[in-house]
Amino acid sequence: MTLDPAQFDARGKKAFAEKRFLDAVEYFRQAAEGYTLGRAGLLAAEMRNNMSVALLQAGKPQEALDAALDTDKVFASGNDVKRQAMALGNQASALEGLYRYDEAIAVYERSAELFSSVNEGDLRAMVLKSAAGLKLKTGRITESAFKMMGSVDAKQNPTLFERIMKFFLRIIK
Image 1 (cartoon, one colour):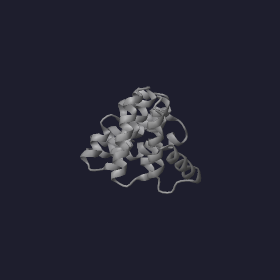
Image 2 (image 1 turned 60 degrees about the vertical axis):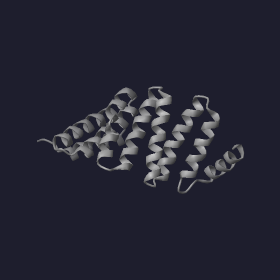
Image 3 (image 1 turned 120 degrees about the vertical axis):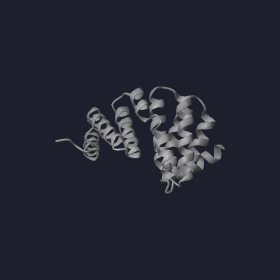
Image 4 (image 1 turned 90 degrees about the vertical axis):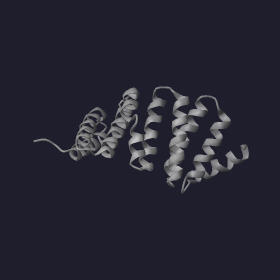
């Protein structure tokens, strides 16, 4: 009995939830192949992004980057801006895992721009926080503070801590 791509996808998600990341990678790879054969490019790209996340969790950042590369272009061609931004976020995370911080920051910022264009404030805030953390890590403290302030501004419902942080960041500014 041969499984269809959706069944591989479901098994991959289950394995990921159970923290069996390498099993998840294999299921997502098989789902991506099935979707590619069936000419379902957006779904194949989604599976490659799922593979990327699982590979990153398994400590394989180069393979994670390889899996996610160019998936943003697939989503762009399908006019799916949210998934395009998510794909870029996955690529940035893999670049961060490879210690390619400047590249990761640039890709996180592109992802944030796209999230902003589709009113995804919380997702934008998440990638801006990642960019801010890398700027802090690389000694760009002022830039980091501005990025962090932007990430808090992007949140739909900031927590009390985030509102306090926003207050202090405005004082620094």
